Length: 79
Image 1: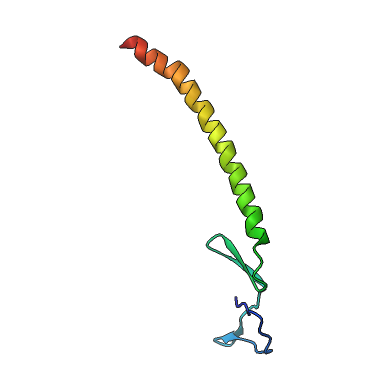
Image 2: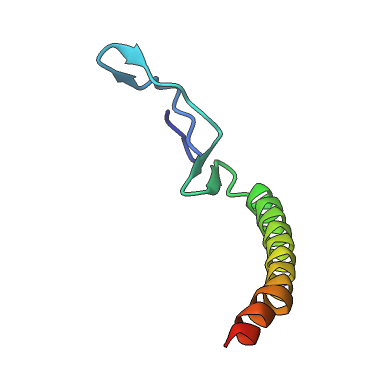
């Protein structure tokens, strides 16, 4: 996979006689790299990640409330 940045020389890149595919975008370390330098897809992904983390936080807070109200009450009663 090869990506050219603002260059169009019409040259095909080969490795051991096999043409390497030319792409306009790819994902590297969870970031989308494009020939235009656009970050629109990454911003959308960041929004999805934030939403998922907020849902996880709410779930963990609920689990903590359950733990505090039931498990800790029993443990403290036994002591």
